[in-house]
Length: 143
Image: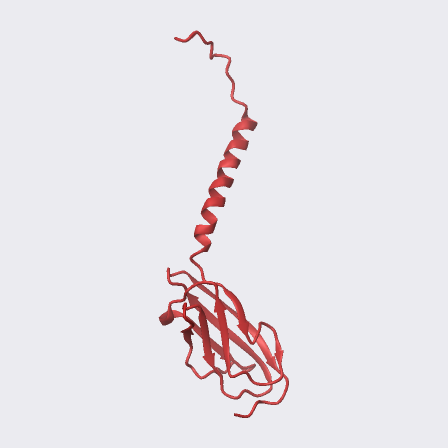
């Protein structure tokens, strides 16, 4: 017996209860930590032309909207034709009042498939990148 008159020699820890407690604690930490981790990355939410779309005329520019503010000096967008030649005007820029829009102007493009490559650096220095295609099937628009 101990000082308070209790016999603790027969106390046993149930391993299943310990395991469940550890899993519960790890789950709670994950639920709290994941939103803070994901806030640092800027991901695209919409583009024009849209991902995989077929359009009738050459668009005047490619625009991608992101869910977070971008660092203008290190965020880029380029457009290539089917023979891997860069076809945009080389003036990739971040626009929008909140700095969440990335765009580049295009010349009058011919009928064909085009691939857009983008790289976005969020304000807190997390990098995301990706690519998508669009196709022009109609006549090129005259300017």
